Image (cartoon, rainbow, N blue to C red):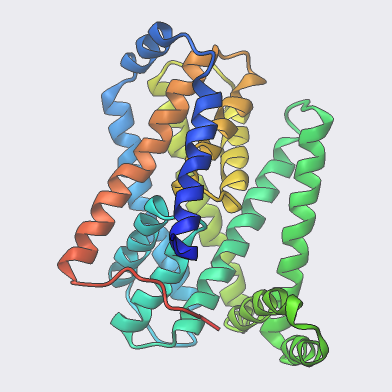
Length: 324
């Protein structure tokens, strides 16, 4: 009988298979392969290089969020982030985030819950940045009402989380309040309180406006680099869309990936790119070629480098049972 963990993995790959079935169900295979073969290899390679270099920017941001624990160096943080991404690429439900915290705890001898909390806050900055980019994009392109609603909801959600982060950064009251409510709440609601406590503990690391501005600025740099990857891959396939089209692709793919139940967001990423490019009248087969290579440019080198580093360091990739 499958364990709960293995069942999740099997289900996630079944979802991948189902998503790809629908994505390729009505595709013109000959035309798709033709578009796939037309991709400029130098531009694709440049996209891969930019994506990998951006991990040093991510490491600089993580350094800011870990400053209350220790003064770590960017070159030693970057491979830990890559390792976490590598695990995310092969296991479902973003387990790599927990593995990354566990690796950081072992290598840097720091608290795993504190490391995980910093990763959690990092994701809030990512979500807030993407939501803001999507909201700004709406001013430049006449999107349908459903896209406008998505932008509004996403922006509102991450704005609320950011406000709570600010409150927790400068006061212990929010955490104390959550812990008090938790003591009175029924057992079935405990996961919600676990979520709230991890978030607030991580937010407590933002104990100055300088850290907050530095984290936000570096988040913008991270996503500017990622946008450049999209621009390079789109150009590699000769897709004629305005600049705003790449912004829409970036936002759609990454908002979808935040809650994707599949390893590396497989299927979800491709579906988001295909839907985003539909607004710009790009042929379906060309959209699929772009979606596959764009995703491969991100996950293949990251997974290879991440697992080589894990192997060289002789590390385990098992997630701890708890990070609370």
